[in-house]
Image (cartoon, rainbow, N blue to C red):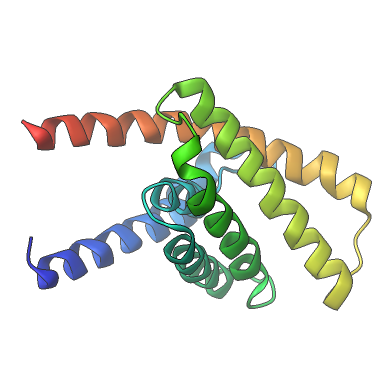
Length: 165
């Protein structure tokens, strides 16, 4: 595939992520909790790349999510960079094609990302109670992202299988 087509495809995928995350997923939210499609793509792409590229993917998608939200710029970029780097580092030792492994991977990535975000906010800007944030936001969002991620992993797996034919 030519580089121009890859760039166009990457732009269209990013545009779809933004539209789905901002306009469609709020309809599926439970309270203020909705799945994090950006985190799903950080995990999905980082598992297919080495750690430096995973960190760059995490940074780029985190910065994009930061720019579209009211959170301070760079907080999600930091947490997603860490998640992307870590997944890029451990990707060869993981059997992540199993749906249970995918669910646990997304859940763990959500916990790590949420915890790093919370620590960064507490350290630099906005003090928030750790326990309250953990049980009312980070855990439910991680569970929701992991469950929705199973659907997205399934869709991408089927798409890859059709593409291989």
